[in-house]
Length: 499
Image (tube, rainbow, N blue to C red; front, side, top):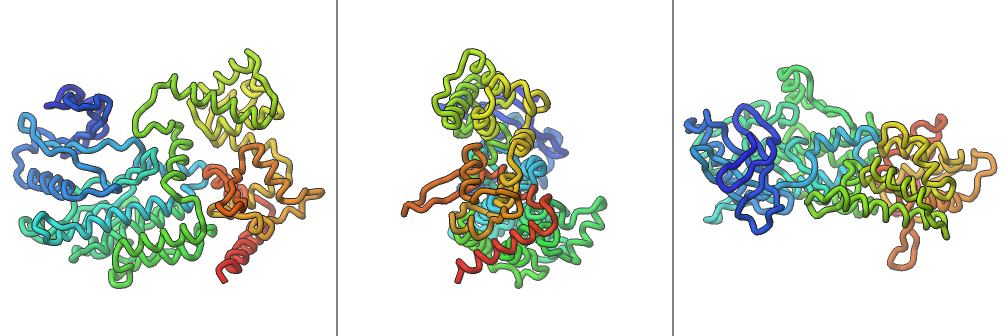
């Protein structure tokens, strides 16, 4: 339970299993009293279990030798009153399982951000696979349990791998002998499931399962019964992601299918090679897949502010949010001066959104049409407030040609040029539709499209990630044939650029 534990104050229990407990904690002697840690400690009844203790210490020894930006940092291994514990850095964010769950309401995690998560996880695995012990000997670490729950996504956009509790390393194997890795059934590699020898390519397969599920929004092997799941893993029948999600580019599909080859020799030679393939796709497509893009998506989705990993006071968040609202509203309606009733309404909106930046920006853009006092009395602010509700509301306010164009913009994976806009988007079926650039300008004024200038003065357009996901969903709801034609024009344009 929370309380004092050695030189740590246990603030909150985060998880409890059959073997240990995990706590959020602070350290009494820390120079930074606000710095948070995570304490993982063994349950008292296991303290005398030599085999379990050795496994726990192995995890700590392996993790202590793996210093990498995408691996959670181990701060301390210790013992308090007979209970062994590991102290680790605290990552302000969510595990990938929670991210996937939250993303379902907007059509899944955007493709570029899925690539960022998997590329960073691959970087962490590649580093661990190449690690050496203090004598310079290869450790041959295999994580063995690469799952969404063991990948943390920070609000700062940094992805970190956790839990080397079932990892194999040369030092561990010498003591305990070779055997099957533990792992989570639905993310095992075929060689793990068959209790065969494993190497680094087993982790690559498990990461491939994670990637496939990000791209499709469904489980690859998991069934209600573990025996059925294991049989599916061994059989290794992998359906191409595009069968479930036609928006997946062929290049990404080829990458994930290679990671998921049944025989290790047919996969990428290393996780670093898989990472390079993903980074190459992000560069070639200019997709918005940086840590900064991931950070903005995380903050918008989970309604938190950028805090450098620390919780800020609610009052500070609200002051920042009010400033954002007034800045955006005055840009949408030049010369507008808020009245006292407008200010009170804005405070009510900020409280409803609790600092959700994109929702506030979208609402503020509508001040060109209605006052804040009218905004706060209408949908979606009178019901259950969410980013999705605000997006639905903004969509309903659009003209038909604006809806058509916004939906078609969902086909772009990242920033796009004026040339791409004119080649891909077609709103000619909408009577009296303006030139696409004029429609994009109208969407920009409503905060649905962002415009930036490149280093040579060229103009690039982009959609905020939640808007892009929403647009992709709406694209599939356009009249029959429109989505297919849009994707065909996009493919033709991209093919022409490649030549």
